[in-house]
Length: 587
Ligand code: DQQ
Image (cartoon, rainbow, N blue to C red):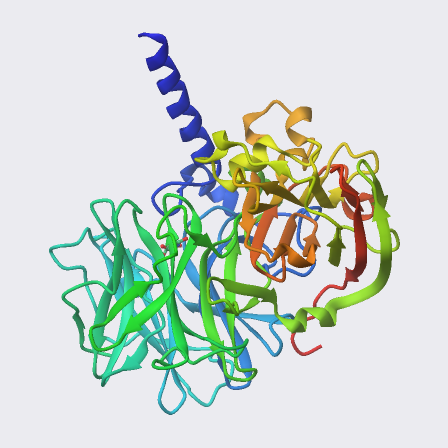
């Protein structure tokens, strides 16, 4: 084999290893070795990397958020859950309720395999509120042939605000894959919307390598007919999991009911790209008469498009919250450690903090912000004001629990002159690759500056979240990068040579479309033991990292602010809080 072929083979192997560590395969990887009776015994849950204020059950595996809704004065969250282990398998719809999206109470699983139409699995889906405030869940069942079919379930008792018991009527399944489809690539029905005398729902799929949002219509929610064409599809994007389709207001933060169409509204189509394992969205125009969605021209459609989050955030779902007239986004933050370690720790997966989501004033992207209720967990507070940071400086934020904190900081600088050049060689690289080249320790002009989260005292471990400004070749334009770089987050790999301990430590990053005239950048990071969930520029670019420090844990974790650029930056204001743990709903 000549050298070029060797390199090609090596590159393919590297991609394979990287993708596998990130859990990239058709849907979820099955680990039969961890499904043995042994692994089903009660496990001792290790606490060190467990989150303090993110949503997670007491033990075992969770993935996609399902069917979120507001009903009976309560928020309901369902989620894919393995009641028997810390790897994917035996999936049921677990169910929790809350009055405020923060303090939760777990109920018995709502939906679990029990009928021929879901005997091999109860996979993701959504909730719709029918007229008269009647919830109905649409979900994917795996039938005896493991075909993915779309089912519905209704509450046994509508006067029970807890919605404890769900019934799966005998006229299920509602929809089965037709002969044009691959029956194992047809899943995750959306919340239905009402327009032109019909209910409409999307089901994710793929034809060859084209991702599809199949469209179905129904007058009575029971008899569904497939539309001739999908609502939308895109070439070379692979399987579309967990589609989500909803209106956003052209003005302000107000959220809209999923059935809202017409003036003053744009629509968002989000798909979870199974091959990339990221959630991509486009904003565009929905034409209800033709049932077509046309993304805005200037937006990139596909793997290089906009993401809700440039980190570990997948299979998300929004819902309309009528109690506060807002749209709320839930997303799953998977582990980045090896499955064998998840089995040892007895749990895997958390839900990211629910986020309010709305259209930015320029209409070009969405903005996201943690729901306001999160602030009720803020405890001990520290503040900094007008502190100057020269290149090479780092200062510690003392006085809070740095392993479980909420930090909001605004940086300013005086000139763009020192911005480093954006190298033409990077034209085809994505933000993550550029962050990989230009980490927090590589000095720059304007930036890198930001936070060193989950840092050990002598900085053997830290997860930096930082900005970096580049000037493009035509001199007047700038590119702003936000990185959340896990490469220095843990010494675990150095201390153990076992493949079982290998961590996935990417240099997650996204560009930030920010107005530079003010020369002010804001950053909020929610730090929660093994989660660093960050919101750049008021929620324009969000990045969630999962990290596993071994020194920077609990009261040995520190938080620093740093600047490694030649341009001095000012911390205009920094507010940081210790985050208290949520309580059970009624306490
Ligand atoms: N997870 C579910 C599927 C969905 C995938 C199965 C996305 O319905 O496509 O647990 O993570």
